[in-house]
Length: 636
Image (cartoon, rainbow, N blue to C red; front, side, top):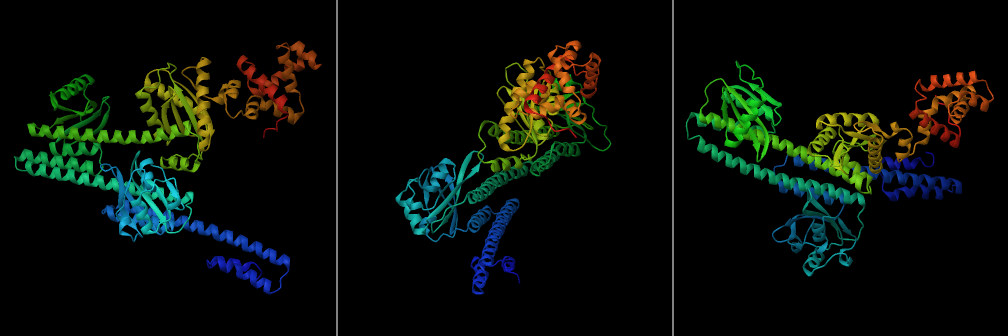
């Protein structure tokens, strides 16, 4: 076997590090030359590097597998204690530490207490309670910030107490890492990993423990929600038992109530509620939103579909229903307002195929309440997601990106790839009053539908959208936002850009583009920086001079380069002569007809409107920049 091939065998066998010295020892014993020994030493070094890489990848696969298993545990959550024990055990295994444990915050006592431990042997340690701000775990619980120490006993960053130091000492812990468990902005506990010997904790280990802490927080919140749901179901069952003691109409109301509750619990929508309602009451139903637009329709077999009633009828009936707090009759229709507090969310417009009793009308009103709950939940979910998207965009714009990987991960969870091309758009109406709620709502919906981000800041709407054509997207935003608001909107686009660090510069460039459009009298339009000619060149952060020159004068430059003509010199002479053909011809020492023919060729290359004043100014600047920068490469 050739020298060095032994290391491939060692790699294939996943041999221990010490075995990688044997081929080198054997080679020295065999009397190989210094050059051969050096080659073998290099082969050993490369093999060890490959082994380390394979070990890291294996480790990463184990971590991902553990996170997937944890997610699976959450999906099938039945026993929250079992899930938390599994998370703590995985933290101990993956970080290869002696002990892992979890503490939960006690708001009433103002401290954090042991909830789950793995690998602990000291009873006093398992009963510890850490006041907020004391010890490593108490400091994490107070600040919501990860902390790590290679030697806790000698680390003066933490406030030591006799009780905490005694518990940690009896457990024999030396190195400790703690990360917060969060629900939104609230810290509910701390997940910790500890070793009985000194050791540092790598950033990857901190990130892994944070991921496990996030899963633990979800498990606790899910358990809370399940408990609340079970309590609600118990209350509904008790109410149902009382209703069943009444007449047949009351029983029908209870059955309808159960069906609609089931819709909520199984994650159904407004259409499911409508279908269940007409199945119980029989007739035709139309569900409309606050603007009178249809949300769902349902019709019992043999009934005619309900056409939308007049706006005046709906508006008056909904107002009456809201005022009376119950459904109202209007001819053959029964209308129940869908409200949540003071919010008008829409209405149920029902045409029964038989006379309804008072209890049947209560069923309709319950359906309106369930519909309000579903619409409110849908709005809450949409608002929460929009807030998360807006927070990410605000962070990318207003704060330096110190951890691109973390920003990339946050964006990926929202369906956005920051490594792919994206554009920034700044839009406003030029009034200085700032965007209203309707503009904010439109921007969030528009961005979410395209896996982008949106927020309102600096008296304007800011959007980050996947794509590589800022001008086209800016025009679309100006057009559609203007239509939604009922007045003209101006939008400036910048990009395309890639990477989290490019968001803030692109936003500033889009803002300058918006201001330039308003200043140039183009309010109500949408454009990208590149479309503003020399103004765009001055506004852009990237100063793409080559692109500017190529876009304006590239065909002429290329023509001269390929054919050895003098179109550029002719243009420059013509500009210097103020457009006088005779003076340009004298400068070039050619006949006037020659100048005319050359300018006709320029028109063929640049388009018939090349000599419009605005384009002439951009072209003169492009030729001057070309002269200063030197020749461009011919365009293919």
